[in-house]
Length: 181
Image 1 (tube, rainbow, N blue to C red):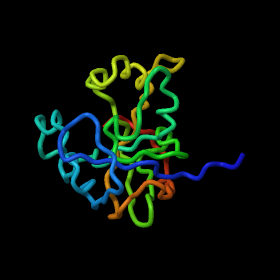
Image 2: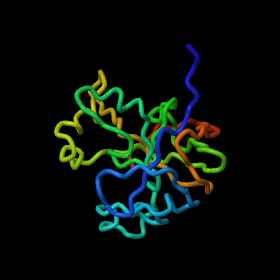
Image 3: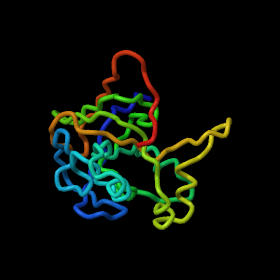
Image 4: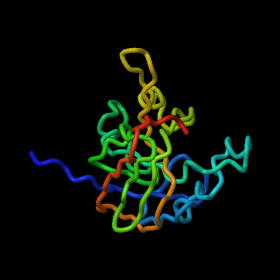
């Protein structure tokens, strides 16, 4: 069976702070800002909790990406693109294994740089009871394993649509694991 080519499955944005984001036909990424028209776009943090603590904090969560394989893996839950608040749903790239600073080329022009893992908040259980436990599991050593996607900043402008190719560019030098942002 041939290897599946990495691709964008879906794109989403919302101009209000809500849990899920509606899917749209395309999104435009703006360098150093995020998804045009999305409530989380901005040079400084737009996350309500983090903005209260320090409104000048750089926005390392401009774009949220989740791999569609996660949805296939959530036994007992039905989740579709955009429902976990992500802007970009991909298939064919193990996002959670990428190192800090990896760049994803999305479509013809857009580039995002991975800044860390998303740590889901308890509002996920309000969406579907028990879902948080399915998104943060533990490994054999008892360490938390987060599966709720990765966060990124926009490194190059571009428009993204479902079906666009995804290309991974690893950073040079030491490959650092992702922390939580």
